[in-house]
Amino acid sequence: MPYTIGVVKETMAGERLVALIPEVVARLTKAGATVLVERGAGAEAFYADDAYTAVGATLASREEAFGADILVKVRPPSSDEIPMMKQGGAYIGFLSPLDEPAISKTVAARGTTALSMELVPRISRAQKMDALSALSSIAGYRAVLLASTLLPKFFPLLTTAAGTVRPSNVLVLGAGVAGLQAIATARRLGAKVSAYDIREAVKEEVQSLGAAFVELELEGQDSSDSGGYAKALADEKAKQQVGLLVPFIGKSDVVISTALIPGRKAPLLISEEAVQAMAEGSIIVDMAAANGGNCALTVPGETVVRHGVTIVGTKDLTSDMSVHASQLYARTLLAMLQDFTDENGFKPNEEDEVFTGSCVTRGGEVVHPRVKSLLS
Image (cartoon, rainbow, N blue to C red; front, top):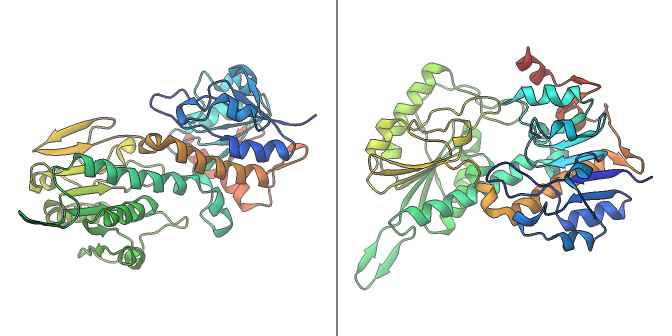
């Protein structure tokens, strides 16, 4: 009997993505899987039920889809959803293991083998599975577009009969995937762009996109961890960094902040003093709002005005681009499914560093060292 893959409708408020799109389902059904798609699962991402059935998917009830041999999702399963998952089945999707480790413990009790997309190692072979990078790129692009519509100024240099309009100054804090996409997008719109990151190694990448790299007088230290993420600065240096950024933030019309460290509260980069230094009408888009925010005045999930500056604390920029976000996310899931399934279904591989790096629960236990340490 063919193994089953379940695709369910995401119910978290504001989430519009779907885990698998018809293009990907077609490849899975061709490989021998039975894909059970909950009715209406793709509606918010503009993928109709008919598009799924046309490529061989089977429309199913919510219970049937959750009970598949392998469940794929965008958001981590809720406390109401976990009991619906197949006992001893498999799960591939986001799990928030470092921010909400209790979810992993409950999933483990179900006997589920769970692979977390957040923990896919950042190695060359796993680039096609790197969902965080795929969605971060979308979020960086969307953040700049949002800022450009809110800013009461042009982004580009304009020469008109009434005189010349100077380009807007955009500062991007954090030059990871989201930051680099934000830089590229702001440059395409004609803004004058600068960027800051504690990692000196990204300077060339920033400059290759046509942006100026902001360098602060901080004592040198290794600021990248083994997974390619920025490390947290020591408390003293972190305070020094915040103060040194004030004049750069103050002369910016737009600030896009992207700094996140997995499993930790977002680092403070924009103080209230920095917000006060900005001109009225300026914009801050805080992409780290879901983890508390990089700005001291950010209200997660809301857009507020403080000292004449609009601070956007939206938690999920990717949902605003649900078509392409779903497309890219589905392709990363496809890569995982192709590597860890065969004609008989889910196939764990303890010799594979992608599997061991992303596996959070197995055999009724939480097996990932970092998640285990958080639970203990």
